[in-house]
Length: 271
Figure 1 (spheres, rainbow, N blue to C red):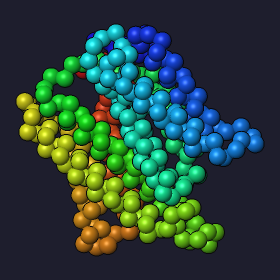
Figure 2: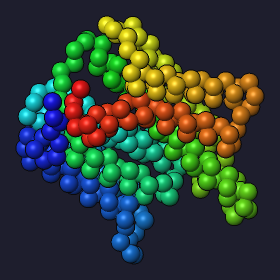
Figure 3: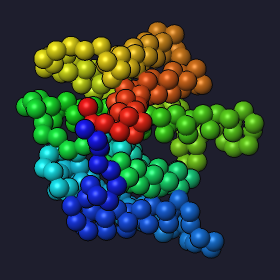
């Protein structure tokens, strides 16, 4: 069955309007005009974030489409993941301002909204009573590992500046050790949620299949398990630890997003 994408998949002007305004808000933060006051970036980013949430409810929740059911696919999952990472930043920014991160997150938010509009995925009714929980746990693990990757990027950047003696230890407004602890708190939480997701999938699966999603999910889980064990037993830190984190996140991204991208975009199919 051919996958319907783009404006034809939307059931009315409401999701398009929300998407357009959210995209404009994100782009205003990602590409601020000359002379723009930095004080506007935080509230405008939160405006885009709030509209992004409305869009997720309208579209992925099934209210913004012709066919009833939950809309799944690589772009909707990426959209939720980016939204969760921006939510984490919104909470942290109240405690430790990180203005340099806003433009990167705004660009990611704009890309997520645009991708979800261009590739809305497929509408399907959940076949199992456990399917919604499995989906929520899976997306939550994506969000937690996404937040961990964001903090790891900040950690690597802070360590580079420290080695070059261009800044004090730590990212702007956040000590290096605190940033490292936060990074691995997200890794630990993501690992617990991912383990629960995989366990639920095994327990509720009618027929076990060694498909790309299963293989990459298990490989990602193994990499994160090795990372946490190496950090606990051998004290892995710095770039060695973040490389393992990036590898695990990449494998997890390939598990669902990568496989669905191949099916939906390259093969133009829904199954």
